[in-house]
Length: 393
Image (tube, rainbow, N blue to C red; front, side, top):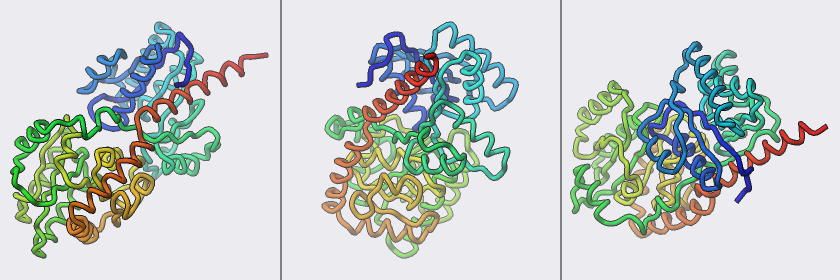
């Protein structure tokens, strides 16, 4: 493990700790720093994951870090300056654009090293938006969460490739371990979701918050086409929080009803036990309409030994091997997704199990949380060493 200074204190800044990959990575890295004997602080609005952060020995610095209001952002900068000085923070790590402005201002004011993680391939349809996105590139180094994201950062912002490090997101291999999931956990979910024990349909799980670009509506359309063709031996489980998007959820429910799919598509809401959820399913699906910068929901099921159907763009081309660990499908094409579901179903349980084991071995090797944390600590060490060299006469 990378050696950090004995008095190392990390301050991560993220909007919320509600749910999601960036939030989970924040907690994982904080835990790694604490394990090394350092201190870990997270400036955030808070959220349902905050208790896990504190259970790992890190500390919460609550502030409206999610706000895009310029006056609130200035206030956050003042709060961060005070926090950095009071806690003798060694390095600031920003994980989202709005709080990155406050974090960058505070880091400059206190001459504290600053890094940022480019967690998504942000749209930039104007120069103003491109300027807004570029705040993530203004630190000592930029971390990209995939090779796909790294190439985008270099091309979009003209950043020196030497300043952009690709560190794929990590999966907690102790939590996502099939052998650690008891049968009762799977049964609990099965009952909660209304899935009959003797249901022999192909169970397909789409994990992701209910937002249009995640592709839930596309999959319902694919399921509708299958039903019309008499190919209805598939159960689709939509797992994820609507996060206040009541209109989109209502739209999905109306689409399910109009297609007569009430028994074939279930919106089951947020799930705290994703390892059990993946084991309940036969197959995971990641039909994002826009390229995923990493795509945790295409990797976690593979770690659990489940093959994946994923949209053929973005980082899925790195995380899913077509025909070996899953299938890549034309993005946004409902008929292509309908056809792919039939191919996955007709492959049979034995073939899917073989693909799942191949997927598991590869994902464990490439996408462990330990590997991600070690690479992140190496970035911290590199930045601190560079600052020391700068100060030498």
